[in-house]
Amino acid sequence: MIGGNGESLRTLLPMLEALKLQVELCSNPEDGLRRVARKKFEAVVVGCADVLQNHETVRKLRDLPGGKRAVVLALARGYSSLRECLRAGASFVLEDPLPSEMTAKTLRIAYGLIVVERRRYFRHPLTAPGLYGFRVAAD
Image 1: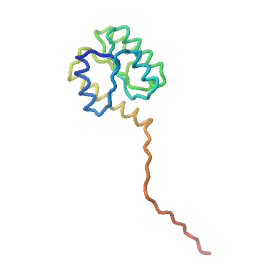
Image 2 (image 1 turned 90 degrees about the vertical axis):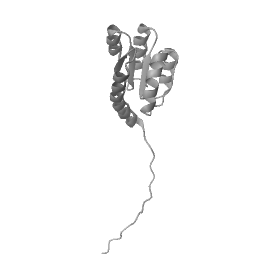
Image 3 (image 1 turned 45 degrees about the horizontal axis):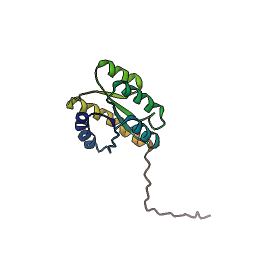
Image 4 (image 1 turned 120 degrees about the vertical axis):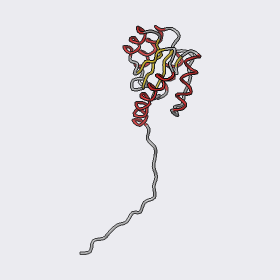
């Protein structure tokens, strides 16, 4: 999660943890963008204090290899900010302050896309016992 105020964090963190999503917090956009540049994330929540910085962070995030396919949830204040976040490339926009019920519904929808993204890259080695036999054909 990049940015976000204390109230947003108190609302979002329990919901994200209930979905069994590992959360990494970043206090500023530059730190968050550096992390996304180095590591694969299925989802990123962007909630910067400055509304203009919010849109720019989403745009920069979409330009990074790790951010192209990630599900991006942006926190917006006001209708114009909501539109700008969507234009910048956010997958979902949550209105700040976050109403609990609507946030929970949006996260459940986003979780479906997060699982699809996770399955794209996750490969788990599988070993199983087996029996090899050869059959010789009689002439």
